[in-house]
Length: 586
Image (cartoon, rainbow, N blue to C red; front, side, top):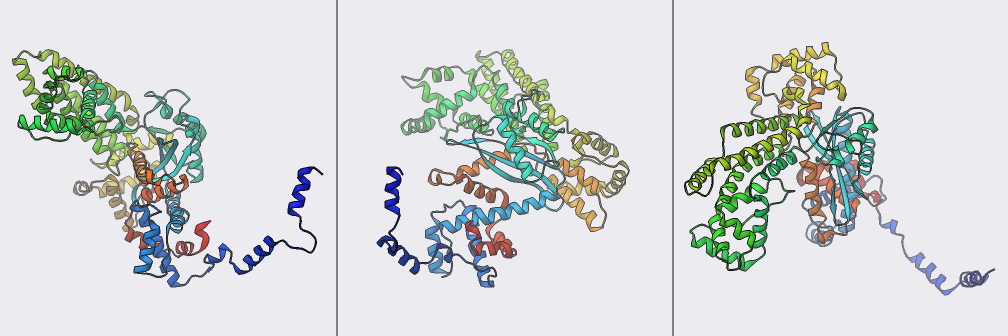
């Protein structure tokens, strides 16, 4: 036996018939103490009062998450509730987090699973972003239900070691398998990076779109982010102007936004030129709607800003050069007039319950609008007025200016036409927008083009359903449906009518499900990051990814007020039993 082994034996082995003092103390403590599990509720049949208390504690946990309170603050809040209202209420930090993570989040996921079991077609969308050193990958599903409309739900929040196509494809496939969606997926939604789609031509094999299709063994649609495309079209087109408007806007904003003395001096110059001072706005290439308002604000106080910089004895050269040239104001005004159109288009695309068919129409309309603007030399009345003034003063040549604006329009049109070809593939679904009377050839086109993506329909039965649908959708009924702001609400009204009259339209429902599960943008996935940034703030950095996933699940997927959630819990005894018992800690 080695020296160390002999020492260990001498230390741990007790003499026969003897007990150490420490052992005696431990045995005494055990006989007078209860194990931790003794404090857990072991009742498998809780009383009505127990379930009522569980409902209050459950909605308290939901309220904490929904209103972005920290779990640490609940220690104090729980004690106040107990002191002021309910002596039995005990839902402090640990219990509140356990209820949210182990009871409420699985409860919401179970409801989503039931919906997905009934859905025939779905689209999975993904995006990734860094939070400090942690890269997060939310995966979202979109589907349509005749009962509840168009739905977008977050299925998973992965923490990934990188952003390669292999890693993203693996996580996407795992999520699809976990929710049994492999046979229901008809499209992938993501932003337009090479990692996701392989570029504008959807070429190459080292991207998520290609690899995921290979894993599933069938054809899929690739839906890029249209809002990103429209923003980039304006940004790329603006490069054709002789002044870098966006760069200058950002530099001027940075020059003032954290400097009190400079800002106060600017206020004085604005007062001197008789305009009301307004705070300058910044722009970011990841904030699609920021450039237009930033240019507008600059134009509102342009004379004040110009006077400020030109009066400085040591004005930075880039600013003095910019404001000394009178031509720059007219280019600024022109770009603002165009940015309004692009921004309005993006705002429509990012609304709730917007599908890819609607976005396809919006993209077509903006291209047509740009072509018309180019043909008619439309530059906006404010731009035209300023241009005439500068031409009369000899500061600019109208021909040169119009050459630059034509180049702007040409570039924007070319960019949009190149990047929106995937939306042309779903033109056969335009009739599902219910903007005009439906013809049989519309359904024939859907039947023919949908085959390659899993939409298999029997022609004779589909025609019978079309006959019923055509009889119902009179001109008066079509006009009545236009009062619905959302496309899914229109179809819900249609299906409610037929269900009420015991007329089944299963094949038409399949086509509508197919159409409305296709997302128009990736904005809803990116909103997950906004929620996570609020939750995972510097004060809450100790949250684990598991807890963050549960919180994000409730905030993204529950989507009801606390009172409604309380009533929902009261109607689910099995969930209340889990809240009451020790299951929530395991």
